[in-house]
Image 1 (cartoon, rainbow, N blue to C red):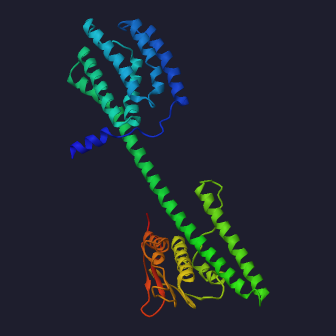
Image 2: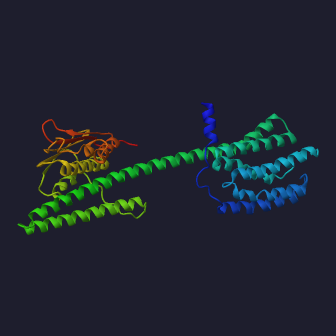
Image 3: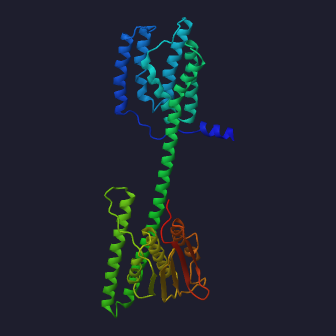
Amino acid sequence: MVGNAVRSLWAEPRAPQPPARVWRDWLLVAVLVPAAIGEGFLRADVAWRPIALVLAVALVFPLLWRRTHPLAVVAAVFGALIVLDIAALIGGEGTSVGLYTAVYVLLLPYSLFRWGSGREAALGLAIILAAYVVAVAGDYTGPVDAAVAFVFLMFPAVLGGSVRLWATSRLRELDQVRLLEREQLARELHDTVAHHVSAMVVRAQAGRVVAPSHPGAALEALQVIEEEGSRTLAEMRAMVGALRDREDASLAPQRGVADIERLAHGLGGQPRIEVHVSGELDDIGPSVGAAIYRIAQESITNAVRHARHATHIVVLVAGDDDHVRLTVRDDGDTSSAGWSPGVWSPAGFGVAGMTERATLLGGTLKAGPCPDRGWMVNAVLPRMAPAR
């Protein structure tokens, strides 16, 4: 298990979209360069002053690439410090060579673990620890000071790893939210288009049949088709606006239980649709009301499109203290010749979408043939959607 964890960390990719350079980076350079020059000239106890001054100023500029090239910058900066400390150790200097301004190197462990890959973090950490060992060997003041220096050096690395973990977790949450939103929009698109197009097809077929003998009825059918088409376009524009993630996208009001009765009017007289609503339904949650409406819409659409010889569809909505119950039943032919198993099976988009709606709200949905004749969809949802 430890080996798997190590391999997983080693294979960890770089953090996505690291910022190249921002105004804070240029401000950092503008502050650090004069500070290093001032310390180099004004501080009295600087060993190897020209070298320490040039190095402190030169190593400021690689900070501009610390996010996009974290390992290269760590290798360049800490490698230069290792060479300087080894030279000081060989030269017999009793103290570390360098300026206090060089404390900016603590930004590099943070950037390494925040933006680098797992492999870069491991290699960069080895370079940082080597620089620490050489620095302690050249200026050893006791185990306590060495331990404090180690903690001081590693704290930015731990902080960078923590920030990266939080950012990764946040991105995964956002991806999950986007996925759920796409699934919801897919269900809304399927339910809306399927229902309205079915209504238009039914009315068009009826208008074609009655056109020779009742031209007025044909004109009425065309009017209904126009209204359904306009309503479909309006709802699709609303969903497209949401997909584009525009702040000014105008979303249509959420449909609810009160809108179910309107479904019968858009489909014409055949099959006859009856809607019965009973119980307390005024204070149900808006998401529950929308789910009840969409499940009823999908069930009616499937009955109209696939229930052969159906003459009657009954929609029952009942609310009690804890739940809202929806039952949609038709009297169509349930024989193998009258129904399409591919549409009504759980693999179909219709039943799958309805089941997803009910499950996401903590409810249940059952769909299947009735014992005598017809098909029935039965959904039970809680009055209020569960908190997430």
